[in-house]
Image 1 (cartoon, rainbow, N blue to C red):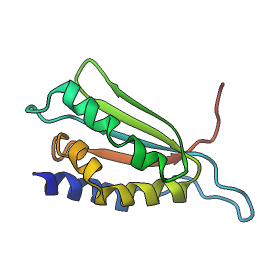
Image 2 (cartoon, rainbow, N blue to C red):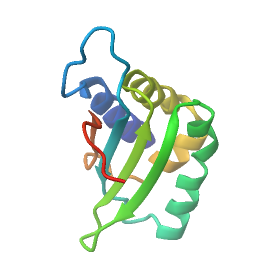
Image 3 (cartoon, rainbow, N blue to C red):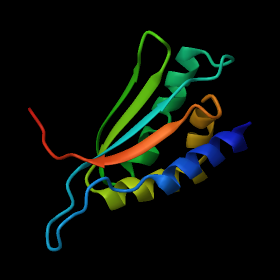
Image 4 (cartoon, one colour):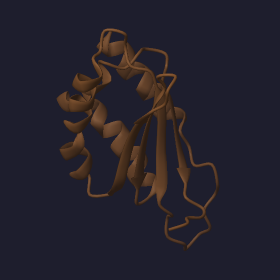
Length: 127
């Protein structure tokens, strides 16, 4: 089951491409990685949140993480939102974490086939 989750996430990353083109000579805008999914019926929410917290160090060690939110709506759909400093950082981090034991614990609790991942440049922000 763990391999199915990781394979699904790997496929989602492969198809996650910038949704707008960038002009030559400009710096990359910050990027949101937005992943929606459902957790497996066998996963306990507290255990899942602990596993998510266990991924903090590997994400921070990438040096490009700005902030992260993990939310669940009333239907049980989870959304993991990570702000990265650039598209390259977002895509390389998404690929690199697949090789870690910390992410394997987190990913093993996600329902196979429920993952939708995208990466989008932040075009406007209201503070």
